[in-house]
Length: 104
Length: 104
Image (cartoon, rainbow over all chains, first blue to last red; front, side, top):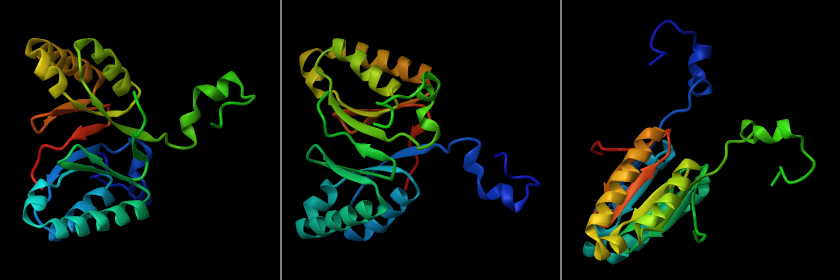
């Protein structure tokens, strides 16, 4: 909001210096393999995605496996993380966020 | 890890200045109302908690309602966010992280 007025180009290039941007957690259903581009984009935009995989699991298990493999490669290449959450969901995180695998 | 050796008190107070700290997503089950202190502590330590509420829901619905109310107040007072995730889970976030409620 502070950047809408008469600021120089230089100042606009680093708006995050002054105030950290809000990060979002987005719960999304996966209905088809074509939807993984949207999921990748969300993680790329620094969102944490909680992907409900059951809609695709009920339609096509092969497509689901390919989708998860592709998302796995993408998230790892980005420096993020990916993990199962129960039977129905997968968590995908951007760089700087990890899924805790220890005990509490 | 960098702070284990002979560092001055002053340096130890602001380790996050140089490198942003990793944020964790922690999946935790809620078995009793006495466990909410641990959940609060995790959010206070800047973790995102995905709380599976079914273990307590199956034992004591009144306790569950009190637990969720107390967690709600705590997270809001901290400047974080809280939202349901399906029938079995609640997401709690620290300040700076919000649960997306829009459509994708």
